[in-house]
Image 1 (cartoon, rainbow, N blue to C red):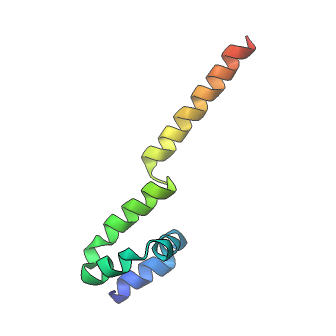
Image 2 (image 1 turned 180 degrees about the vertical axis):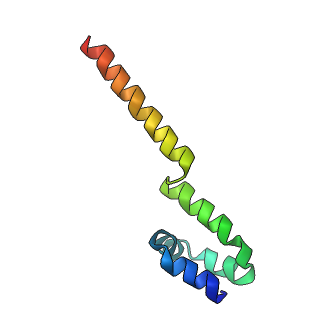
Length: 73
């Protein structure tokens, strides 16, 4: 892997841990450093830290509170 790619992975603990458990990315990143964006996207998708996931989680919480309020009426 390229030095800048290694630095990026080591700076982000989520990326570092993801790479540790999904070692097939070593081969991919070694061949093409531009695939780092794809790895970051997959990592965020798996860890559910994308903005869509956060929005979905917030919506679910609001619905839960709303249904709880309906039950308490």
